[in-house]
Length: 380
Image 1 (tube, helix red, strand yellow):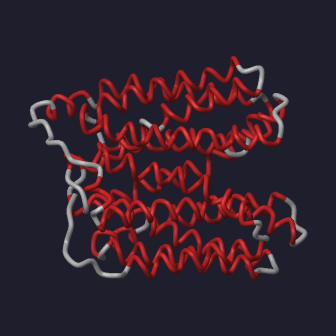
Image 2 (cartoon, rainbow, N blue to C red; image 1 turned 90 degrees about the horizontal axis):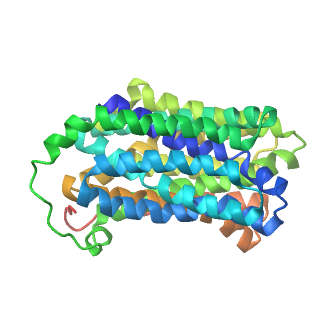
């Protein structure tokens, strides 16, 4: 059952990463202005934030089974709507719907996985799920970039839609047995939202998710500009991103993943975010491709430590009855981080070097704040 959930997680993030290289050019091909193009790119993350939160609430009320099925099937159907788009406004509507329903999948999938994983193995389990996210980050952009150039963007999305619809059907039969067991459980009591934000563990997990994707947004925005400023072509940006992804996946899958079950997740979280902050500072000062590769390798190790750590921290700080809501907010902070990571730097009018320095300092300050001890143990 867990292996099948890993496959769902892979295709959920595969859906996300296949959009990155093609959406802006697709919007422009429909005649969208620069403003509408940016809005079309960001619309998915915006509505995805609401989808994550709604999924969290519904997962705790109805269980992850039905929410996962609905998310997979409706995401598959929403992807087919790209075939009907002929103008920018229609693209914005489809992007909103796509992001909203796709937001149902990840919180439900991770709730399913967390509830099925033994407590003493939750760190290793989080690392393995992170590996599938990393593999999707490596394969997705290359897949869509190459295929879209030879066919069309809607055709690429049709392939993803086929996988989503197939997974939705398979999930009904594969996960049904688990659903029948959970139906016998007692209904959960009402837990106010404030519990999550008064809980030190969940707040640190939410902020860890936010800063992880905030950093990703900065890398996606500034790294190609840095590469260009050094006189290299865009291919270097792609290989640098692949380097970070491969290193992160190795951290997830090698025996190093045992550390996440043996060391306090706050320590590995702080270590990971520190490495990501240092890598941002290194990129700001890099003047050759070799230094950029070193910085992105450092970034990959940091990412590899951070992702399992925030998942483990969330699991440790919640009970099964409220884990759906927790993951809903968790991935909402993921989506917000992506949006703010690039838009904030643009709003502050920071240059390439100052943008990386600003981000590096922010990440290092957060790494230090993470280690500030809480007064007493808390559990949502």
